[in-house]
Length: 476
Image (cartoon, rainbow, N blue to C red; front, side, top):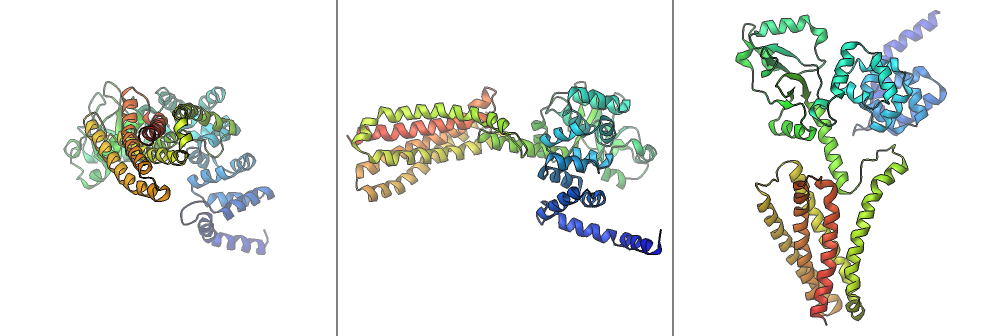
């Protein structure tokens, strides 16, 4: 190597930390979203085949940001990036990728590379990735893994999806209740390679390996070495292995847990769930409920057009049927509409305001059911409250909008008809908004998915029928 080349190499090494820091600043905006300019730099490096530059750009990103970057790139560019990722980096990125992108990425990575990458993950994350593999490739990947890791993943996959068993990691830190703090710390230092990468509690177990308490790491470090674990341990909230993940998230939120032991039906400790997993569950369940209220599913940014159509069209068909029933009400009163065309102008307003009121009550009820704030204990009180709110809002809007109708059309009876119909529809809308999810919950259906269809039908049907029916009685 020439002296000039050596000097340039040494200068680059000296500047490397500064360059990396600059790239980190360039990569993310103040909201921690990827900057378009940085994405363009990655695309340009890939187009030029500049492997060194690509590794430099990717090295400046957190694995979660690399996963986000994958979502902005085409399949060809994603394949180019995968070629420059070490198995350790690939492992962390796989657990962060959107499901659609991860399935595509998994098809391009060799079984041997995947097996090595999965060995870097906790058992829960590894099982989540393996679950996305096709059967043939899954068998090849598992066969390439060490027996201990393979057994842990297969055990996790044996549990039902979206349960504590699938959510938990099998790596736990446990100690017998007769140990002292000093014995515990010495043992963990000796067996450091077998400990989970991150843990918050040491579970104290009896001879049958059932948790009898937990010692937070912070308590362990503060205690004297001769202190028995039994004297500083705290009660634990055990999570049954078959519990639904939404119930687990509720328990974590209610009791402000950082981690919790997962037990089999006999009470034996089989794993743990940590708060980082619960954050993902809460986010996923919230997104699912929001989308379900709109009658759609999470299509994702890489979903195929046909998949999106299949997810949305059924609900549109159901809404078409309910709309046809509401239209039947209009047809039944077409004689009254023919006598006073103004009715055709005003009746959509009654239905629209009722729909908005119903949506408000529905959103509050579904959220309350999800957070267990609404149950049989307080259902009656909640329904009565919503009825009063609907009635009060209806009266207030009737006074205001009735006055506007009178000012525009100069017909007091028309204004009275409009106001009364509005009171009736908002009352029914608030009642339907809270009753529909309660009844669907009672019969075992997801209220977030089905409620909006019934509420929309109730407000449209009642709005048209009340307005046109009152018009037939008062104006003719």
